[in-house]
Amino acid sequence: MATAMVPAWCAETVTGIVGENIAAQQRRATPLTITPEVSTVRARLLPAGPAPLASDGRLMSELAGVNYRVWVSSGRADMGVGLGALGHVVPPPFRRIEEPVALAGASPTLSVGLRYRVTSESAVYADASGAYGIGADPNANYLNTKVGMEWKPAKHGVGFERGAIGIHFDSGYRLSVKPRHGGLGLYLRGQF
Image (spheres, rainbow, N blue to C red):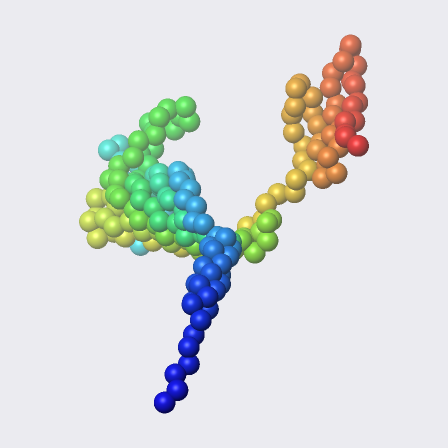
């Protein structure tokens, strides 16, 4: 019976090739990034039954709250999970805007979101959030879902810079108008 002898250098070569392939795959793998986000929520509630009343008898049909979400990103995809609070807005007396707003019957919320960046300027998303036991009714649930597409604004735009009104173009040039010696100065800046 004949046995085949495998040279010792063959095992080392295979180990080296496998090691190189693993290292190449690790270089290609996109690392996970974690990004925190704090957002506010403001919504008008259309209750199925009678809306809760403030202490002075006015309707509380508006909801407000805050949400803390952590986004985990890998490549073009993002997934977010968040916790927050949501409650009925107690209208200020005498309908004054400058008076502080109070929340009544705040409840904890849970939110989940998914985003996929189609291009560097656009993304599709789906969000869902919910709260249980909002207001005086312990069985009142609040569910909110959103599905859509978002676009980033164009890079050029109108803005204020160093006391001037200006436009920034995609080419890198900036055109600005600034008051100067009783008149207006028109400036065009760029690099070449």
